Amino acid sequence: MSRTAVTARDGSVGEAPGRWSGRLALGVLVVLALLAASVLVGVYDLRSQEFGAEMFWITRVPRTVALVLAGAAMATSGLVMQMLTQNRFVDATTSGTTEWASLGLLLTTLLLPGVGLVGKMVVASCFAFIGAMTFMLILRRVVIRTTLVVPLIGIMLGAVVSALTTFLAAQFNLLQMLGTWFMGSFTAVVRGRYEVLWIVAVVTLLVFLMADRITVAGLGKDVATSVGAKYERILIGGTALVAVAAGVTTVVVGLLPLLGLVVPNIVSMLRGDDVRGNLPWVCLGGIALVVACDLIGRTIIMPFEIPVSMVLGLVGAVIFIALLLRQRRAG
Image (tube, rainbow, N blue to C red; front, side, top):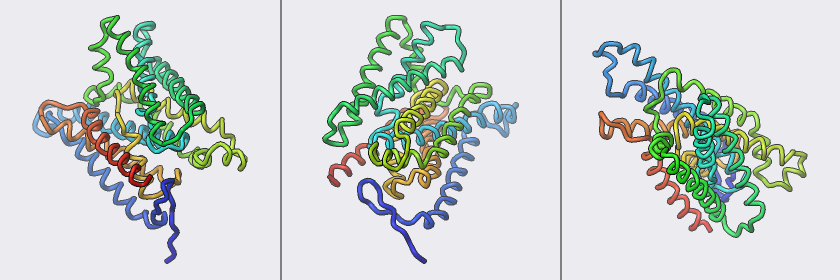
């Protein structure tokens, strides 16, 4: 049987796509097992305690669905950001996008205290879009001598915005509320609150539809223009999808650090840079990672719970450092 190599941006060669069909099915089974564990694990005993069935549908199922939607959307948005910036170390966290969404949410609370959840998501997504486009414009005006400069610019931009957000929260005695909003936990996800996350499912679907265009845009403006692609439209459209995913997830769940950086990098190292072919794996990887981190946070000190952002941040930081070291050895 013939095999075709797939080459990644760093020159590594992966196996042909046909070799991965069985592994994809295995990945689906692993994710389903994690989701089953997420539904069954909890302090409340669904079988022996009263109202077990009600608690199952009110808390367990919504939480698990939220994990799936948030994990897939943030991992997918990280893949889009990396392709559009042509840099492996960029996602919503390292580009400052989530910090801009946080600023938008805080300003909504200060200036429009009566606005509902949907209004907060719209404002947060708009601010996330502004932040992502600001990051893109800065990259166009900076001479990039190494790939590590790009995430450093995003981290510095995010730090400035985060400092402004913290200053405003301190001025209006909202620091405690700010910490509660952005600690990245699915504890408060219940029926009636998670449904707006289906918006990010639409975002993920749109990324699938734009996959080929995003792949072409990832080759650079000159190449994309030469083959007839509307580079600027793809850039703005892809950035808008990332902004919506970041804004909605931030409002409903909080921050999920480095999720969009870790998963696409691992998939790309194994399979190359075909966006359409990698998307199912990126979605599965994002779901698996966020569910696994959530399960660790729920069980390690049960009956108390560690926010998923803390576990995810620790795991993501370790993998991020490993990727940096790998880049240094390759360079």
